[in-house]
Image 1 (cartoon, rainbow, N blue to C red):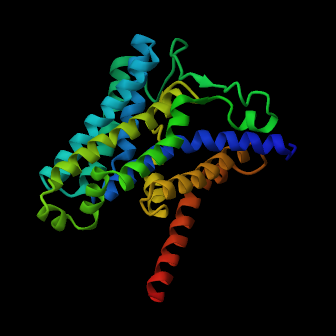
Image 2 (cartoon, helix red, strand yellow):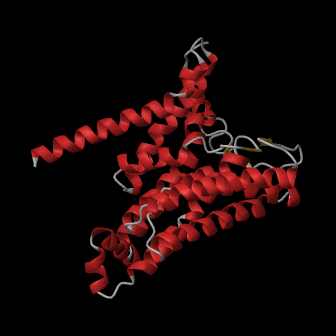
Image 3 (cartoon, rainbow, N blue to C red):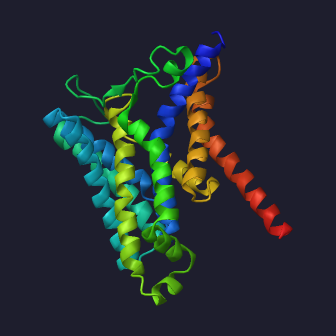
Length: 303
């Protein structure tokens, strides 16, 4: 194994692909946090997006319809979570964990009912997301490798963070959402329909987890497997905390976790044990949260 520029370019490409679904999920957590909505259902809504995109893909062989199915299913489940937590005032932790368990069980059941299989479903007729190889950079040696075989949704995830930043910090609706997050009662006293905004935020955030799920099942590979998210929904919560719910900060923290996942995959080709390399993203999550907590305590004492 030669550690040259091309090798690191391949790792960079893997980082971008690993980062994209995690970034979408982290942005979901970020915008919910800005509206003072505690949402831990990203794991489940991503799974729903991944599963229903494959179902529609199998029957229609249409990429656009598959993406729409992923987004719609995720939005519906997110709206259901929002109904229980915002309208019925149920515990967001209980509802979120219940939603994750429900969707995991439901997709496993439907996998058997629809495809008569357990665990994994793949079919040669499934159509993957179109890969983009930009003509401008095709002949640039290192950059062409870093940006090779990325999908439209991959590129969309990188710019979505910028779009959300502009929305939250440069628009009137964004100011209202952040005002709700800072002080809901003060926002309500000014005539802002707090619960309505919160419900819309958590529902619309399902668009991002739906796209994340679609990337998992139709991006690098085209299949559905149980536990396809592999804890990305919970890692996204850590990325959101590290990024302090700021879209650009979340972009950076998602990039960090993307590097950790890419390194874990590449180190599987070495003499290291698979169990050790597979644990790298989760160990990095724990260490990053510990470092974040220590820094927060130091800043608190300093003030």
